[in-house]
Length: 530
Image 1 (spheres, rainbow, N blue to C red):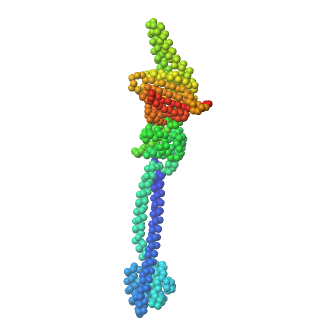
Image 2: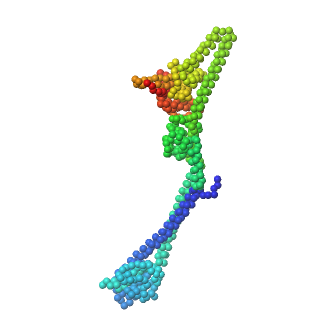
Image 3: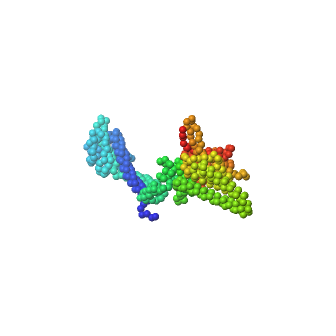
C-alpha cells in the first residue's frame, strides 16, 4: 500500500540529519571562536614578550643618550619587527614622542593610546585603534641604571593580521566539520536502514494502530498463542489464553517453561499434535514465519480439547458398544443358522443342546457382571471388550474376584476411560506377540481393603489387567505413560498418558510387572473408615 507520509525510519533519518547539522554548525562556530580566542591569547603573549625584551636591552638606554636616538633605534626595531612578525614597534619618550615607527613619517608625532600604567612602571596589554587600525598592543617602561623610567616601548599586531591568520585555520575547521557530517550521515543512514527493516517501512501512526489491534486481538482470541524468535528459545509474544492453558507464570517465557512434551517438539511445522498436561488435553499447531526469504520465528497455537476428548471418549464407548452388539448379532446369526440346519437335518436333540449351551455361556457372563459390577457403564464396557477381543482372536476373561459396588472415587466416565484404555493396550500387546498360541487378557476390577493401624482401614479401587504379551520394562513404561503427544486420532497415542493423568489427579499409583506375567495395576485410594 502506498503511503503519503514518511515511515518511522525516514522521520528518524530526517530528524537525525537536522540535529547533526545544527550540532556541527554550532561546533564550527564554537571552534572558530575558540581559535580566535587562542590567537588573541597567543598574540598578547607575543607582543608582551617582544616589548619587554626590547625595553630590558641596555642598547635602548644607550641609544637614548645619543644626540639622535631615532637614527640608532629605527633600523634595529624594524629589523626586530620583521623577525618577530610584529606590525609595529614604537619606542617613545615618556611624553609620548615617538622615536621609532613602522611609518617613518609618524616619527616625532605623539603616540596614541594609553601609557599611564606604563609610566607608573607596569607592563600591560590592550586592544586599541591606532594609526594602523585596531590592534593588540603591549606597553612597557624602559628603566635606566638608577631605575628611572626614561622611555616606553610598545609592540603590537593589527586585528587585520590576526584575522588573516584565523582565516587560514577556518578551511581546516570546515573540512573537519564536513567530514564529521558525512560520517554521521552515513551512520544515520545505516541506522535508518536497520530501523526500516525492523519496522517494515511503517509510519509511527501505522505502528501505533498495529500495536493496538495486535494487543486487542491477542487478548480476545480464545486460542493460546506463543510467538518465538529466530532462536526458538524465548517467546516474544504470549497471550492470556496460552498462560491459562499451560499454567505459565507471569513474565518472560522460554521453551523450558513449557510442558515437557512441548519442549521436545520440532521447531518446524507441526499439525494437530495432541499433548496431555496435568489437567488438559491440548491440540498444538506450529508454523514457521518467514519474511523476505529468511526465517524470523515460529508461531504456536494451542486449543483446549479437554471437553471435546471427553465427548469423544463417550462416543468411543457408544461406538464400542455398537460394535459389540454388531459382533453379537453376527455370532447369533451364525448360531441360529447352525440350529436351523441341525433341525432341518432332523438332529433335534443336538440342536437344542447346542442352543442351550451357547445361551447359558453368554447369559452367565452377563448375569455375573451385572451382579458384581455396580456400574452399568463399566459392565457394558467389559462385555464390549470381551467381544472386541474375540474378534481379534484374543480371549478376554473377567476374573471371579471382580466385585465393585460403585466406581467411587472415580466417576463413571473416568472409570470407562481408565479401564478401557488399559484393556486396549493389553489387547494390542497380546495381539502383537509372535507366540503361535492364542493370546489372552485377564481383567480384575475390585475394591480392596488394607489395614494401616489397628483402628483405621483404607479402601482402594484396584484395576489389574494381565495379558500374554511380552510386557514392558519400568523404564519403557515410564516413557509410554509420560504425559506426551500423539498425532493419532484414536486411543493408541494417548491411552497411557490419559490414564497416568487420571491416576495422578486422584493421588493413585500405576505400575507394571513382567513376572510371572505381563500386567498393569492401577490403585486409587477411595476412603478411610474406622
